[in-house]
Length: 235
Image (cartoon, rainbow, N blue to C red; front, side, top):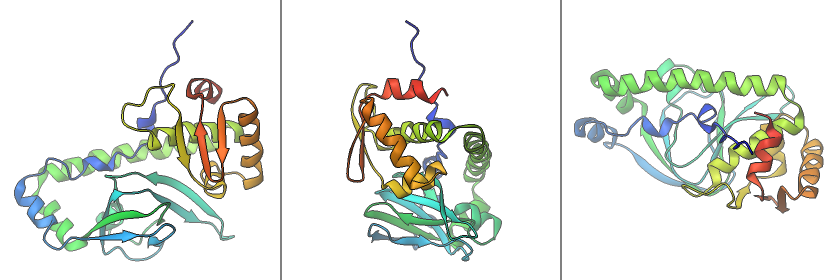
């Protein structure tokens, strides 16, 4: 039997956790000069769309959703950040308002670095500049992949692809394909990610549950059979 290829999660991962790694000691000292670290409770907004950026945010622990609002005040989740990822640097670089909002999906510890310190390091660090160029180029590819799924896939396929991608975010490091992974995400947030109504997502989840591919308990979704789920994604 043909072996099923792994899901290409790197095509949907911004990989921003690499931005500040392995920088020279002098650069690290500048970034740590005025940094602060705070606990954000579940559901707390970190920054809002159209507000002016005052710095960058590093997710130390927890999980954060990035989202946009449409004209009918409907929320559309564009990305979920996991520990190590950096938020808000794009708007700092472009000197523009935030293009999206960020809020915690669970209690999270977040470090803030002021805009002035971040920009100072960029001015003096070719290494950081090169990293940012690579990350921004990769981010464009992630955007194209996400838009293609939204435009070309059915609700069921979009939901399954999101579940598979979320499994990669929630799973322990080096989890085996057969290992059961639990995703903690409300049906409403999952609907926002999928670009479908809550009712449609609940209906599709019920079908997946009947096929013994997932199990649900409140807002928790357990991925029972990753391999079969990945097969249904047809990605």
